[in-house]
Image (tube, rainbow over all chains, first blue to last red; front, side, top):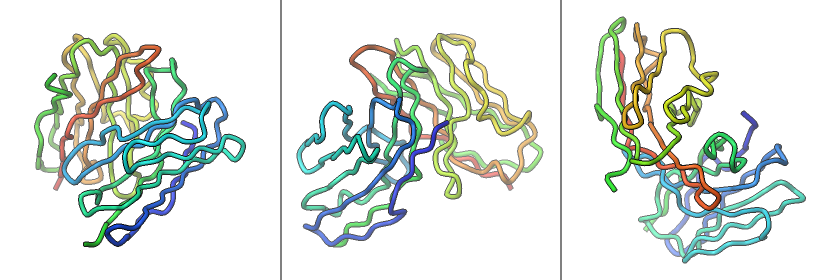
Length: 114
Length: 115
């Protein structure tokens, strides 16, 4: 599997602050970049995703920024809330390849303090 | 839709025992994945199936691990004999290959502890 590198490993943010998680990839064939959110005791669930034909996608307080030339993408959580405390995984896949098999980053444990 | 269903949710077993984890994918999905999650290694893909056929098992750590998918609605991951280092959360996931859908859906996981 091609590697997807994620940073930081952990992040503490005050309520109302901005959480930023970064990912970098190597395989230029990747064409789909989702972020998954995992709460304790649960499986990962799709949060938001982007394709490289756009540089930004926003859904509510969550925004993905994508830099194709740098092969980097990031998740921004605006007005972070304690309920956002979870582990976040970036991922990448080649659509139509292996059922959208995902290559995951190492995960970021986010804690939002009240 | 009930989502991906896994059982058991929690399993504690002694070293050397056989462990069988079960998964029911979302109806109609044609891909099924088994992942393992540990603090040290994160999420690792163990094996995946397409239309019940194993496609890539290169992530299976060793011969003690085996997986089957006898039909479209059921899969098992078996560890025999189990070892303490197999302690992890095992996730089953499924997806439907389509031009618009790229979402892989995960179950809630099977938490395995081998003592």
